[in-house]
Image (cartoon, rainbow, N blue to C red; front, side):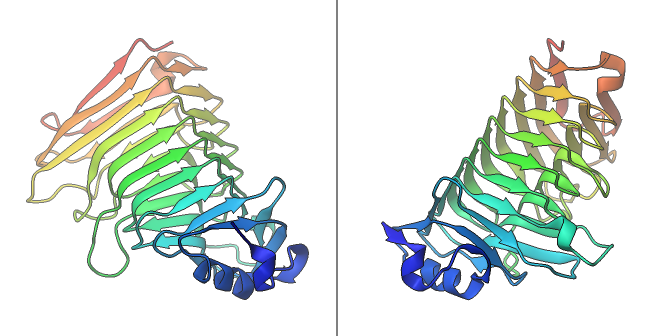
Length: 298
């Protein structure tokens, strides 16, 4: 195990540790890098490498310094393989942003990554999403593949607890998304591809909880997804609990007719803290598109 302090990281809650943390990441590939203190970084963010393994000690965190920006990625997991992140506490400092516009400040940005595991991450007060997941930004449009995220807790993020634009193979176990809101959609999790070069395949969400989201607890919005290439959508949600999300607990919308999409979207054994008629929105959906099923709602 390698300590971040051995690369000059102060972790004192005031020093800009970004350059030292990046040196620690670059110098610990293939080993476990332990984040030990309360580090602050500027909005340039940090890039993980192939086989990076980052672990946060109890009470350790990374928090943004004051900034004025619509866009940032605090931790980038871009076009890398085999990364592990454990017990991260990532604070996007939305209260320190002088900008009043934009929605693209991300705690953990995953683009074109493969074989990634995130355990026990907390993402708090991000200007956009706690976790963002999509294709590669390199121009290759390579899919993110085989992503496992356990016990993610998103609190107070401005746009979403988590956004998913594209992935092949995603498992979420026991995520909690709470007090999400500030700009639309304000969902706990939002599946919303930006274009038709994306996929939504083999997605499993086990025992998610959404609390007090300004938008839906779980939203699936596929207006930009159809293409002349046939797509198969598979999203299976089990034991979703929603408490107090304003728009709906579960919203599935906006797949145009003739979408060339098939597959299945299921929610099994959800517990929604409102009447079924207001908890579930299903609208503007291609009748030949993926079959949407809600089983045993309470």
